[in-house]
Amino acid sequence: MRLSEDRISHLSHLILDKLVQDRNVDVLQAEERMLREIKRTITAELQFEDEADAAARRTIQSLSRRVPEGSREWDVLYRKYFEEETNRRRKI
Image 1 (cartoon, rainbow, N blue to C red):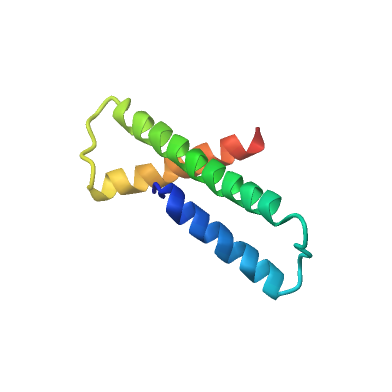
Image 2 (spheres, rainbow, N blue to C red):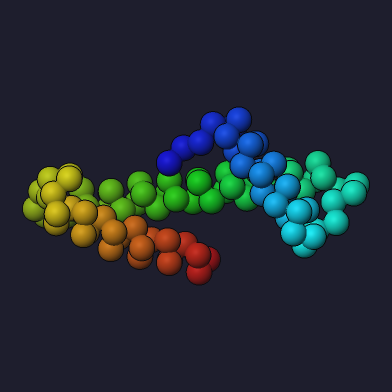
């Protein structure tokens, strides 16, 4: 799922506001730095998921038999390969 820069920025502000509201973070001078780090983390996570999605799709396409996208079998295989890929990448 791709998010626009505006949506990522909005989410970052919401996260920072919640952290400040809950008094888990003292933001005084580091607000811009924290916003940048939150944005970087969101962007990295979205990229990570996009890469895992592409790898899972490639794996399904490389099977010796054709599995039509949208079928129940395809959905099961996709979840399996997506989970395997995310687990493998998180270990790196």
